[in-house]
Image (cartoon, rainbow, N blue to C red; front, top):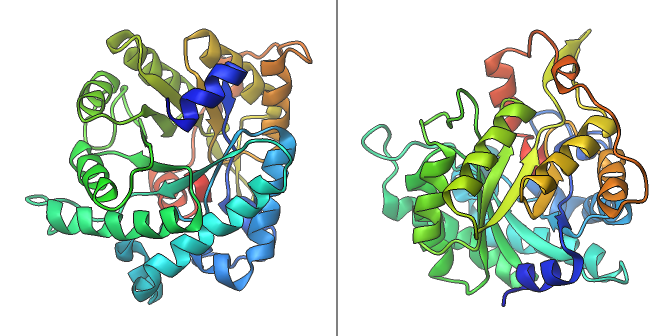
Length: 328
């Protein structure tokens, strides 16, 4: 029994944290800056974000390492610091978890490389695996409990990431994909495709994160559960849909919306639930309360909660790839 299974046996359902990037922006991170550098430049600010999510009731916190592969850090001239920055990311999350007075899982966030595998791109499975191996080595050394491959669209990249991670670490591995259109990822992967293949290679938990909207995430997870009734499933959806308010991008999902969504996911058989872009500790606090039965489930009209027009696709993808998910 791994640490996820142990905690699930104790608590029934596990609550993940919410977005990291927007919290760091509110603390002074410049737009376009590398959140991963803050693990060594401002570790107190990163720890504070983790601590707020833990105080809100999160059982799992994702490290500030979404863009922590050498491919991504090269954009910030920091590809020679992969192990250092990832080890620091796990260390600051571990500090917040250990100070909480209860058992909190530290999940080492590993986002997409931003490259395409051949023949569509120039990245080979071997170079992809090596990049994730380097990142996993740092996260493991820093004290992560599990490795968390997230916001993926291509099964080949996940397979390479899993192979790379397993070459240097014995930690459990979770993997989530982002479903955008008609129940598929950007690369055409369905929920059924994902859970079948990832269960085959022995990933410990599978799911969906980020994505186009709550409905697409929920639909993908229902398909996953129908495909495999036993595998641990993860839901970490965006807080509604992005929309422009003046010059700023806001998400439509209120804490009430996300709390009702959490109950819908739990009732659909999802065991590990959190929130992604657009969420904050206030969202997670209400999700915790409804999951615990401390307050009534809010009445939410999910159709009315979604704006008629989302932000442009290029903006959504930009938000997801740089600040998104654990950095969203």
